[in-house]
Length: 236
Image (cartoon, rainbow, N blue to C red):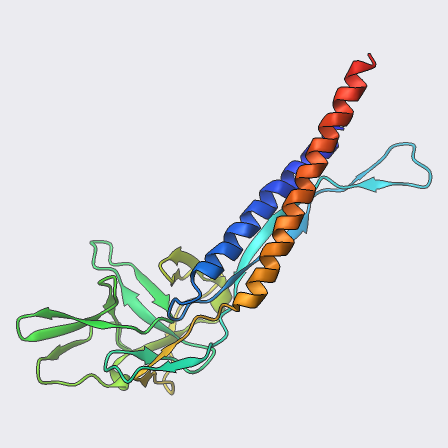
């Protein structure tokens, strides 16, 4: 019955992680430019039962193999705001730079920007204070009398966006799997629009019900394995 404990416990852990992914998607239904994630499962090692005729293979449960992100473009919402920008294509990201000493560069689809004012100079930043970069990878700084234009904001893409690593706050970091980011020359963001969240709340509700039932089933497996183990021990 030890195998039953392992199978049930692995299922509980996997479904708890799955519920976390679904809950995060639902919590970001109203987040600008958010891309939902999906947990992909993988069965653990199978083992042949010795002496069984016909041969029988038993598994050791399941685990989450990876969590993937759906980067397809969502619908746009018209805001007419000067500092709201959206990328209409499936490909392309805004590049942002953190204001700390390390100055890490991340990528996002959220284009709800604002000004950081320092005297007569205005610098385009995100709501978290990260610098928005132009096509040359520089900060976008304008005088008080200058107007922002879509062509001033860089749009970047990489060979494999799905290889990027989520780092929180709707941002993604490059990895070896994603490849290096390059400027998309013929793609400019549209001004006065924001990209909605790609989360489908109805689909996420279905996933939550499925994950909840799977969690309950695995909990039942653990409980049943424990009851059988207690019965076997009482017979000794």
